[in-house]
Image (cartoon, rainbow, N blue to C red):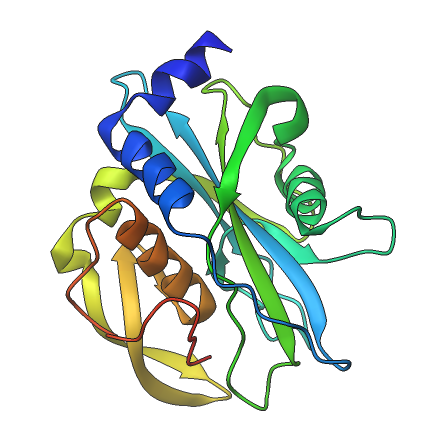
Length: 217
């Protein structure tokens, strides 16, 4: 697709592609009790050529530890998934209606990340990066309260990164956050976005200083 070829030539996307080729991702070896999951960082081009990232707000659901959180599309691996890349593509289609197999292409994967808190199940989450057509239609599922696009320029804004207060288990907790308008991104998703920016050569200076693949949540 010529449109995706042009997007690949954008300086930030080109740097991302080079980084993916030069730095093999950290892959966590699963232990027997660990679940496997994948998420997708889907990029499209705005009319001015600026890349932007698809994000979602998860619907409120009792018993779901990620209820109401801001995230990238994704979910657990199913028995019929050939691999975690297939999981990322399937979950993105189910949650947002975006069909990467038809309207995009996968670029590669970032480092695996794992929750580090006992309130979350032992899990390995593999983030994938893809490009999609600018005219893809978002059709949110019942699991998605909202879907929106975040310009990479907004992700690169250093003042958007820092420490913030979020409600965890009924108590306020100070955590590393990325703030975009009304949306506060923290936990696993914040770590993935931080890692994404490192791949394009502009790591944020605010908030956590943990390395990619070592998630505090």
